[in-house]
Length: 369
Image (cartoon, rainbow, N blue to C red; front, side):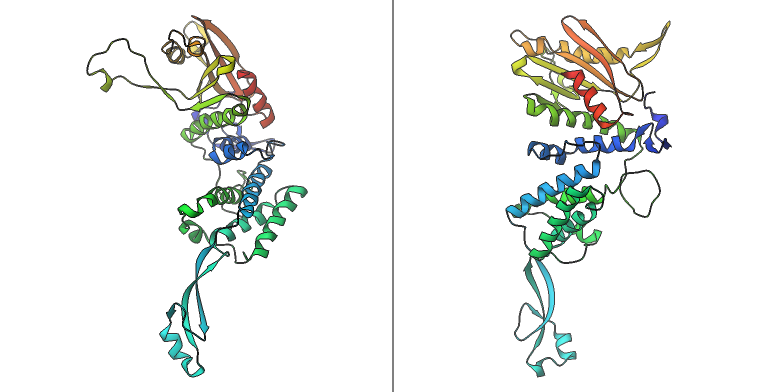
């Protein structure tokens, strides 16, 4: 079975929530790899690969990492508007309150002023996220989340969970830009509790069933996975790269009408003299053929062939020996075939998005390593 546009409705099979046959947990798996936040955390070498199938634990690790980093460098302070009756003027005088309560007779005055505080909307939001996700993860990680939340409270972050409007109005400046990853991780924690398709009591974000959204997620998730896993092994991963035609001669107006070539993913290892051009296709690897039951998509073959042959140049061993991979998703069905055409290997393969995340990981690595 291969995902297609007609299968984007949600269904439940054997207790597993699915969209178009794809378990929802695997869409979240792709979503995390597609996010720059997860990739940044991987480069920071924190322990979030121990159990890649446990998404709440994965997000909790990300959140704890960034909170701990901010605590080492001190949390950001901010100004908060306060109203108080004081013995001296501070900020602006609230004349109406002062007169109504006859405060001047008591030698006091009602004031409205801005006070520098650590109990900001941003810090309260992060503390609330730690408390929220601590209820979804196992004992050791849950203790870590609760301990960090308690640390924030001891530092003075004691206010209530901020409203959505308060959070949306929060803006980052040049001096506090390092807070952004921590806040994004907190946002992810709130909107990941827990990712299912079942009706429940909370309004949370969920994977979109639209085929266009899933197709984009598939491409970005695969690129993010290879970037996270292979970059630390000496591979260079580029997503959405434009490549040139290397024209020998051209007319004056051809640049206005000649389309550019844009690859989905290019991974290369200069030391191994290996380059793989990957094109992700969110449809079946085969289609009904002429005088045969199944046939590869001829247009896709022409496309990957153009990507490979157009880059050949004297002295460029990476380009001259590059291989191509047309990578399709599937459910409970595997294809892994290849052909060598004019010194370029072109592989036609599927990755089973119905499997668990460890099996998906193994399949993706086997295709390139």
